[in-house]
Length: 435
Image (tube, rainbow, N blue to C red):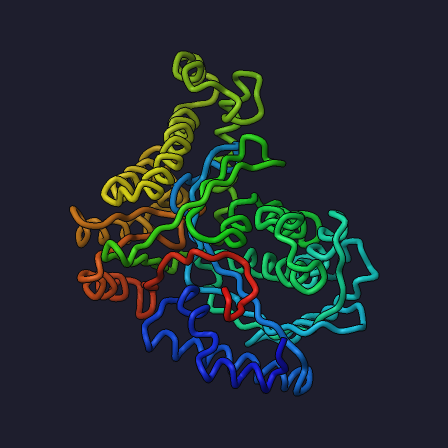
């Protein structure tokens, strides 16, 4: 370990360039920007917590959904990928049994006394609850925890469907694993760190989230997650090199409001589960697809046609998520693009979450998809992602079309709406020269 002064020198001298290239890309401009970002974070740590402290670096990425739209809540299959936007933490242990975190652009998070191991009502829906929950999750697994001081900086876009909260949770988990558990990747695997993050969000923060976000942020790369047994999800991993194929990932914010959409989101799960209930099951995953198709005439009378077509989307998109992962593993990029488009059409046409029927005049997601098809048809791929109805879309764009694509999206939804990203093949990790 190095102190803050030594670490800054090492970063400036290029000792960390190999690690930074793996996380963000190796071109000169990117490396220079990340060196400056990391050195600035070290400076801010020293200002906040004192100079010449011995410190380590940690990073956890944001994530994007690639396949399996609205399948996780019915124990289906999803495909997700981590992106080259992340939260970076400069960390030093303390002897106070207290975790103190200062995040760039925000005030210091309330000190978290680790001797208190139950949810605190005043912390609900605040970051302190996530810290406490992750620490308790580590303890519940027989691990060790202790105090630390940390300064964090994040470029994971908030409210963009890239899971800034999940990145924060798994970063805290990686810090506790690294500082107090010998970075034991067997006892505290990336998937286990993700489950602990979910536990913190469910029990301490108070949000009943699934596990896709945390798993994608913790594991890194492109992953498929089979939720047949939610307590023991099966995770497969693959590496996707978009640059090799001359593509980038674009996440475009349509600037639509998520207000009043709770009922729209809840209806998808409720309707899928209403179909399952026709067969005496809780979730669609437990209903054989052949049995479902044979019973459609009776099911539609009981639960309505929209529930039936949403169930059709579930079965198709679960199968498609697995096929997408296989295409990545086999480096079948044309097939990958075709499956992305098919999944996008299924979400729009069958899952019906491109816009809310309560306000049909607002169709930002639909418009962004139409613009994407107009520019990329025959070369790229496009789809809505996440909950839908408003928010962001995803596109895989050939490098020679990036300027035209970004101009069309920014021209419609405002400057800075289109974010050009790439897949990152590393999850929540200590950042060391040997990465």
